[in-house]
Amino acid sequence: MIKIAPSILSADFANLEREIKDVEQGGADYIHVDVMDGHFVPNITIGPLIVEAARRSTTIPLDVHLMIESPDQYIESFVKAGADIITVHVEACTHLHRTIQHIKSFGIKAGVVLNPATPVETIKHIIKDVDLVLLMTVNPGFGGQAFIHEVLPKIKEVVQLVKENSLDVEIEVDGGVNEETARLCVEAGANVLVAGSAIYNQQNRKEAIELIRGSYNL
Ligand code: DX5
Ligand code: ZN
Image (cartoon, rainbow, N blue to C red; front, side):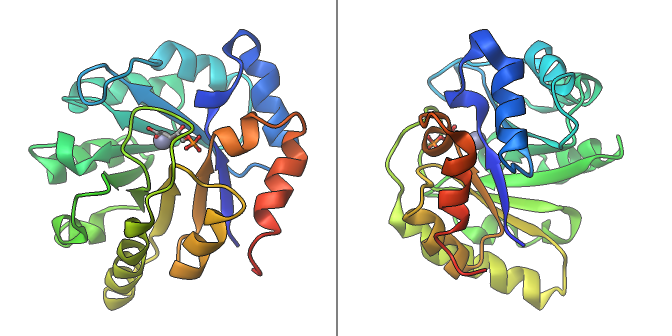
């Protein structure tokens, strides 16, 4: 079963509760929350306060994607705000193993994120410790960018790594995912699809989610 995780980055923040409920009713599996600090990525978005508001708007899991420097010092705040999954970038963590253990110590799921140019090799030694691997299919920072096709072979590499170690790790893709690129990702082995603009830029979010689901035969 492939999971769909709408990214609220493209939602109308003046009506956040309604926007979240809209995709929940449309069949979303996770709500993807993009946290940006203006340092790790050239954009500033939201913090724990909005995650807490999102938590009160839905019961489905909140997938919190931290695009921030020094994530360790903010993890507890995001856990308290109601995150179910926290993902951190390999590129932002000097002590990645410690950061992953820190997330898991709160009893929530931990994931690791790779930018398009970062090789899968960098997560080989922590694959047994994570619940999820997120592969960026755009350079992080903004919604609505074009899918980078060169990431597709990396999905297959992660599938292989997970198989070799007989693990149950989710493989998520994020950026430029729409009804055309979703199929390519699923064929390569991804099982969680983040989609921001492809869902929120449509009037009917249920139809947008179904359009993505209908694009692959699984
Ligand atoms: C990009 C974010 C994505 C973004 C995806 O930095 O991590 O989650 O919201 O937006 P789309 O689906 O529009 O590329
Ligand atoms: Zn994201």
